[in-house]
Structure formats: C-alpha cells, structure tokens
Amino acid sequence: MNKLSEEDIKMRLLRFPEWDYYDDAIHVELEFENFKDCFSAMSRIAFECEALNHHPDWSNTYNVLTIALSTHSAKGVTDLDFKLAEAIDAIVEPEED
Image (tube, rainbow, N blue to C red; front, side):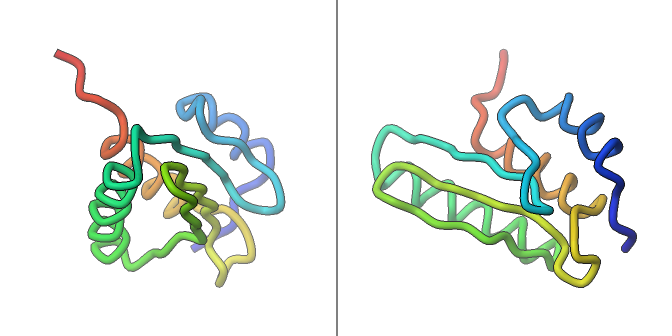
C-alpha cells in the first residue's frame, strides 16, 4: 500500500468534511448522545476494521470517540484509511430518506 501525498489527502478530504489531516493521519472526533450510543458505534466500527484488517488508533471518553487513521506499514495515509473513514462515516451518520 502506497502512502498518499499531502495534496492527494487534502483533495480526498473534501469528501469527508468532519475529518482533518495532521501528524501523518486523518482524524475525526465524534460526539454521541451518551456512552451507550458511543460504545455501540465503536462496536459496529470494530466489525468493519476486522473486515478490512485495518485498525484505528482511537480513544473514548464518555460520549466522545476520537479516531486517527494511518497505515503504519506505509508510515502515513493510504487508500485503506479512506476506505475505513468512509465505512465509519456510513456507520455514524444518520441515513437520509
């Protein structure tokens, strides 16, 4: 997996308005109504991580989930990080009718 250029990362982030790029990773902070909803989202995200065999650096404090994605073997952001970011957004964003 090849590391993406900073320019490519910034262009791709246009599709991910909640995400930021710094420290060689893409980051998002998600706030939920309560701990239970946050933990539920983490559980659903964990299944996607296993399916992709790609795991985030993340932390949880009560109802806030902080996620950083980078591909450690590439020492930066790759296509795989954006694939997981897309799956995470699909899990946490309400479906539109």
